[in-house]
Amino acid sequence: MTASSLFLTAIPEADALLARDGNALLLGMVLDQQVPMEKAFAGPAVIAERMGGTLDVAAIAAADPEQFGAMCSTPPAIHRFPGSMAGRVQQVCRQLVADYSGDAENLWGTASSGAELKKRIAALPGFGEQKASIFVALLGKQYGVTPAGWREAAGAYGEDGSRISVADVTDPESLAQVRAAKKAAKAAAKAAKTG
Image (cartoon, rainbow, N blue to C red):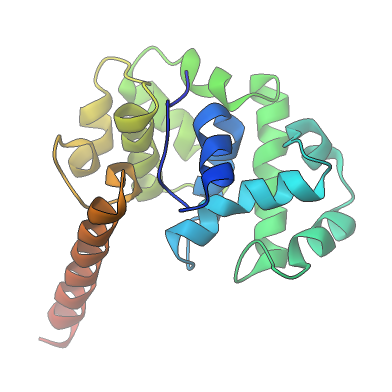
């Protein structure tokens, strides 16, 4: 399953790669921490370009960690922390090769329920409860991956009409709404700590 189009990077070529390649979408989610969403989800296109135009999960998994880390660190780096995130990308690619024949679509294409899908995602390096819930929501809302119970597995992120995560970003307006919701949530959390 793929998406007809995505609006996650504001770079047409990078968004097109995410829409047609489940591995790219998953690796974008891996990179989605401590950097703007657009930077994270553009990372797979940068990696693909630097690897000769193809995002090859098996090649990433087998790459020399130092060489792959250096490639990811070359300006413009794929992430604010390119070395550690290069390692995380390689770990996820190794798990995809070992467990899903190198294809993220096998991870979700064979999940019998939303709960199983979330469990599989949460088992990947770098995915905790919240990130797994968000990715389930992104798959369901924009990628057509809707096993029974996917909205429940995604929690609040799966709610129809929500504007709280990357799963809800479809255009500049929804991006602004998600940013505003995240800013409000951070302010509320900060107020709760100090109050």
